[in-house]
Image (cartoon, rainbow, N blue to C red; front, side):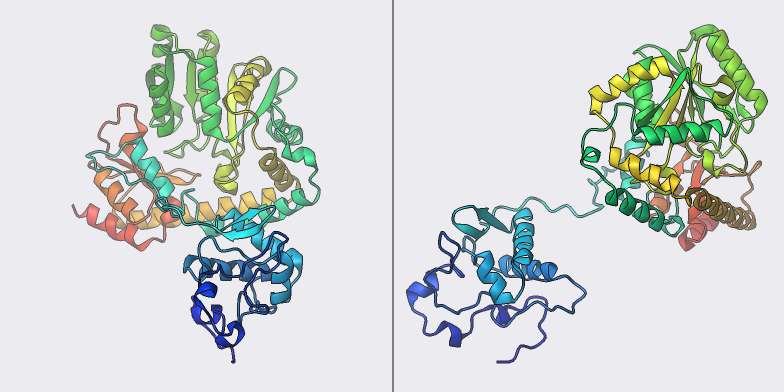
Amino acid sequence: MTSQPSPPVPAHLLKRSAASDGSRNDQSQSTPTGGVDAQGDLGPQAPGAPLLAHWQPVRSSSHTLVDQIVDRFVVCIEQNVFRQGSRLPSVRLLAQELNVSRYTIVEAYDRLVATNHITANARSGYFVQHKRQPARGIKSGEIVPIPSQDRIDVPWILNRLFSQQNNLGLKQEWLDTEIVARSIRKVARKMQPSALMYGEPFGFAPLRQTIMAQLAAHDLHVQPAGEVLLTTGVTHSVDLLIRQLVRPGDYVVVEEPCWFVVFAYLRMVGVNILTVARTPQGPDTAQLEAHCRKHKPVLFICNSTVHNPTGFTLSARAAHDVLRLAQQYDMWIVEDDTYSELSAGPPLRISTLDQCERTFLLGNYSKTLGAAMRVGFIAGPAKILNEIAMLKLLSGLSTSSLNERVIHEIIHGGHYRSYIERLRQRINWARTQMLERLGDLGYVLAQPPAAGLFLWLDMSRDAEPLARQLNQHDIPATPGSLFYPDQRVSTYLRLSVSSYDHPHLWDALAAWQQG
């Protein structure tokens, strides 16, 4: 009988042929397929009857031999060609039948055990797994359905964000996956068993030293009085700092508009939120001084360079004024530096003026290399960071030294700076294209940002319905209401410049302009 190309479920090729089975009686029909004895040999079924009659893995295929064998077994098991509870051939016999090595069969069986298609018993061999009531299937990228509600809030936008394929804000073709893959391979080649242990409390020392050197190149000399602590990102850094520095009932000052996760977190820990307006030059220092006099806040959280969502960078005068107030009123400063690598020039930081005496600088790599690269850092006073390191250990033990080693390899591989420059150029070009098209539609920004991923657009009326419509087409758009602590109705909308070539965006904006 000649084997022919088969459909995805080639049941007729998986059954034993009548010639090889011989005449079947009732007892043989009830015997499990391919039985093996305690030593792994075939049981009482007809000798020479192969388990996978007329099928052999193809050595010239683009799929490995193991992949082909696993796929064939999965098909047979899920379609009940191999009955539940049936005993499977030993490694030796199946290797002979398929003309492959025993190592190939061992790996294939191990994979099938891992996916719960078969079970392994040290004495009696391998068995087809009994079917159980399946749990509700969850597909990759699936998110719990969002309840219908009148207004968009932080949980709504976060659920929507993580249900989108591109949830970073960058176009996927802008990312350099090869620089990451090459660094992962280099780390793997020289990896020692110690890399699989818990990491250091402060994080991978060579990466911390690299970060200190990068900061020193911009005149921020962290040591000897300061330190760098590695985290899983800016969100983790903010969490650790607030838990260390703030108590319920304390006053904390934030800019408005401001990254909405900060507001949500501060409300959750029960602090009193004070706000100062963010202008193109920086935070309104007159408002900040009034808050300092009246409430004695313990902490000011700001986003100095390439502010989210406006894209503005604070002036030198504003930086000096903020630091003066912090020193005068004994207030800590947390400086979010997430997007500084996208700035048009060297970043201007309050931390540089202060040399991290009462400031904490927060940075990360996930916004440029990819959201999966969860590595961030806090640069700040060593005394406080020593206490935060213990808080980090108590709340989640160490951060991933593997991720930290990969980031270190990326930076030292020599291509990181050129990649950042290319990324900055692509973002700048997309921003220029977007601003031109917005101008053609009649949208004008009083002071367009010179850097960054976002545009902060005044849509002339409540922008939430438009944000909801754009998100339904996987266009990352956030209503301005989320960037204020009271989530007031706002006419502003935050758009990512990576959406510049999305056709529905321009149709929706044109329709919105017409009312």
